[in-house]
Amino acid sequence: MVGRCWNYTSSTFQSVTLLSIRSKEARRYLEKYKLLESAIDAYFSEGGLRRSGANLSTSSINTLFDRYKDSESDEITEDGTVRLCRDLGVDLEDVVLLAVAYELKSPHIGRWSKKGWVSGAEECDSLDSLRNALPRLRDKLASDPAYFVAVYNYTFQLAREEGQRSLALDAAIAYWELLIPFGLSGGALKHVSSSSSNVDIRRENNHCNDTDIDMEDEESDDDGNGWTEKHTEWWFEFLRVKGSKGVSKDTWQMLPEFIRTIDENFDQHDATAAWPSTIDDFVAWAKEKKLRA
Image (cartoon, rainbow, N blue to C red; front, top):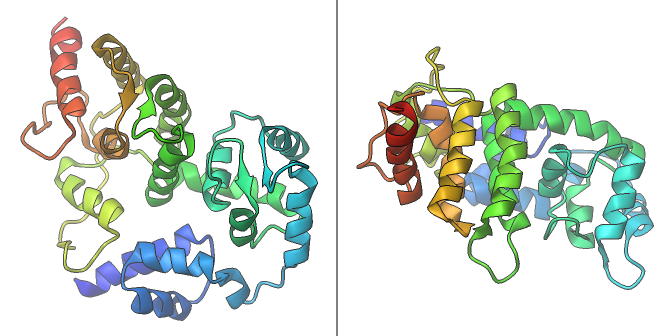
């Protein structure tokens, strides 16, 4: 049981750090910092790629940043972001930019700090290397559930207005319109059996702490029908009808797990479980307004 949890934790560490480093190096970080999230944060703050032998130029990374930096600030701002996307040949609304923002620790949509850029762009010290990384990030975001959730959760703080606890509904819907279809089509939000829902939630929120997870609960694919584009449309309609002004962090973070585990008719939904009230209310609304119609 412990061995299986270690394998998951180690593989997730290597997956999120986008490295093919030796498992020995992963073990060093995980044993030192105990929790997966702490190990990942430490890896990036300590310049992990340099430790693993990548021979990249920090001065070149700084030069690339300075090419797009605002002349009157220490950040790349909206104008620089537009130029960067143009030079990369990527649309400003391409979902892969959310993965880039996660990797480079962007503090807000359209803004990039030098500290985040330098610590996150360890593999990319030129425009070409950054451009070449985009397909890999896009594929990873589409197909890797753990990485999808990491980027998805980061998007909440990335898009939220400063000083606000919730994400404005229009903004939330705009990002859901990017992320949900992408995760569904690529497999990151693939439907799984409801029996694995509890372990999935704890894996992604608690990072597979050995004391919290019974690893005898195995995630398994479910060939049954689950969440589809139709359900996404219902979700948006419900939130608008309800008159919601914003989306809480709890609702935002729990939605991917709900999407992955719910059946198409919501028959398996447990209203006594620890789902946000907004999700419970949505299920009741959908059953009454959509499924009985």
